[in-house]
Image (cartoon, rainbow, N blue to C red; front, side):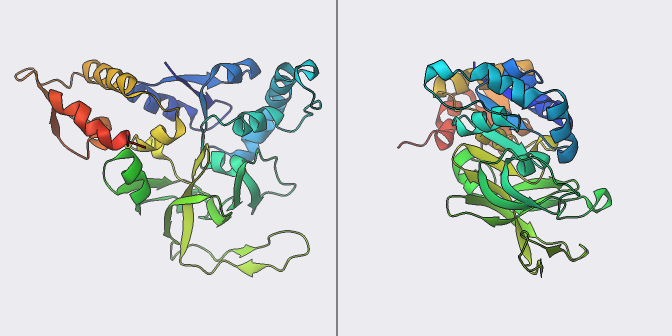
Length: 301
């Protein structure tokens, strides 16, 4: 079974672990360098991004892992150095990576609105992020987001619930970045003046919408917190793909673990929130329908 690692330095890693358990995916908390070697994908959760960066350096996570993985006898290269080389190596290796909220900031190539002195970034995602675009904790909010591309790929409704907690936003994206969701800029948000770097003029963000979810290659990033909702479709984007046969096994394990088979009619399955997200929002499905309903998640090339 594929293993999803959740960076467990600080923040909402417990919520991600619980969400992985709900959908029958094996998750492991990643704190030690060697644990990065044993996972098939990685989730970088929400939290306080500056604190997470400091904890990564305090535990020497990035340096120690890179030193263990790097071997000049295997084909050259240089000593990886101290600045997030392990996470950068993982992101660059092509395995699925998903960053939520603070994780989005970590994965961005550039961040503005940072604290004095800034913070280290893992990078890999060709975008510019504003660290606290939506304001303070008191300005956290929930809203419905239009996600037609997610619906097309993973099935279910073409909207999802977005939970924004002291959230960042994406100001600019490169040509290879696919935009998955944007949202209106709240009318009560204080105006933000943005400086894109030394020697550039400051400008006020004046657009009425802002980007909150993107994908580039193996990287998925959301400014909001899907792990705090019942919509499991985002986890499919942040986890390694499985074969149809494995998916069916996982679904049946979930059905049995949660007692979803109708005791009065064994061929009928009562859908909880997880199954509804897989089966187009249906309350019930027939046992023999499951394989057909999975077609939406396994499109033919």
